[in-house]
Image (cartoon, rainbow, N blue to C red; front, side):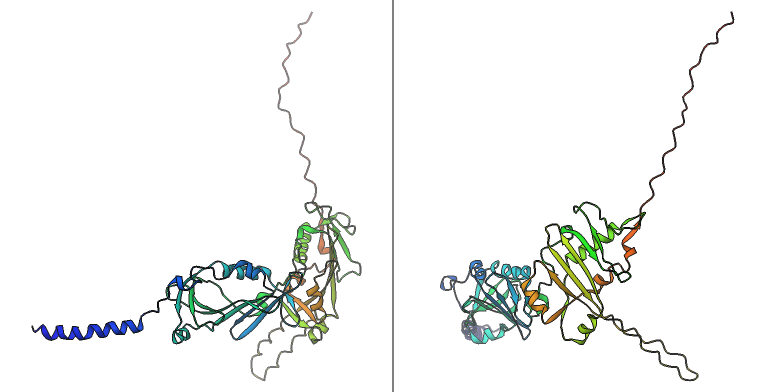
Length: 372
């Protein structure tokens, strides 16, 4: 075997390979040269001072604004309360991870990191950016590529956040804030079968419901009243529709009311509105000699809208209600008792009296008295 040509080939290729590696080596960027490495992705105090947040994702932009009172709302028409719990989770996701390493300042490599997937920005009251992050793709070994303020430098962090710019997923849909069913002291319901409203009350959350309208020999259905109190105290909306929408106008022709008072004196009146169901379309007449086709499917149920009057009103919801109606889940409306008698039940018969115990004690024996 001739080794000399082989050694000559290796002698030529080794410097070439070393040169290629040198040109394509990862760019050195020691932590000492970049103060961000090892630091938090965001400073908690900085995020807490923000007056505005903007999210860009999926070619959509969503904004949040904090009022002078500290209330966050979603930008749009109408402005609506923002989900504070989700905004809090977002801030927590940003302040928890640290910058693990500098990745590159090479423009061609930065372009390959897809740093235009999403963007999140925090601003102060004057509109100055406090934090601006461009988020890119996930790294093969874990973590996510990102950059600050569109700078020509990319970093890697163990950031785990799922951003979307869909308003529906960021809304606080609570219509009656700060309540639970145990707070309700009295509940008044309107029934279609009687012009008189029926009021139910209890002296404490752990006491039974009573009503002056209870028929003789009956009592209030405690389970039904507990369910209604829970549904009304935690009422949420699922959608909005303009007040001038024909469906909203048609729904308001058939209102039904429910109201409740809390132990603290707060009064909330809820007016439900649902348009009459559309008549089923006529079944097509079968042709001679043919089997009748199946009837057409029924029309989808009409939406249920609510209007609220609250002694502790939410200013954002009040303003939104001037132009829009709040749609709720239909099961809350259909779960209301249809007739006043549905709220009562017979008083259970008292348990039968126990029979008197039978004595099995043997009477004492007495000796006969002898005859004189």
